[in-house]
Length: 113
Ligand SMILES: [Zn+2]
Image 1 (cartoon, rainbow, N blue to C red):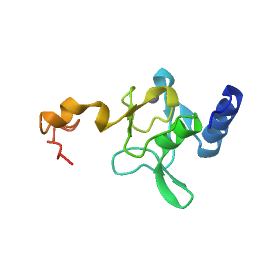
Image 2: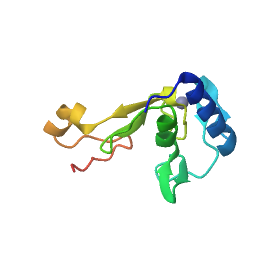
Image 3: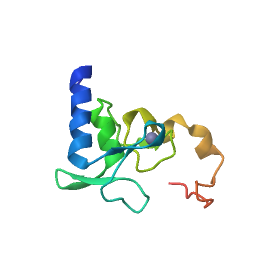
Image 4: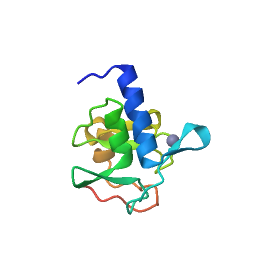
């Protein structure tokens, strides 16, 4: 479903207000609620745990495929500004699969799935 820009910005404004999102450095929207084990903002949607940044991206009108991961271009994991988020899918990054395990951001070897 395509949303008009006015709808999108009012949805996002309501989202920020309801969840107490604050403005941080560099335009980041900082989640003030609970965080999951990875340091990402967490909220409940329809009784299910959901990641706050994914939810923000959906509110911005972006469809997120089930297989997609949502990354932060700003590197701030509890940032929920849709403009700082990008979709990444394993399908769009085949080199990563071909060359075996890589180190994740903590320097651990990623397990192949
Ligand atoms: Zn950010």
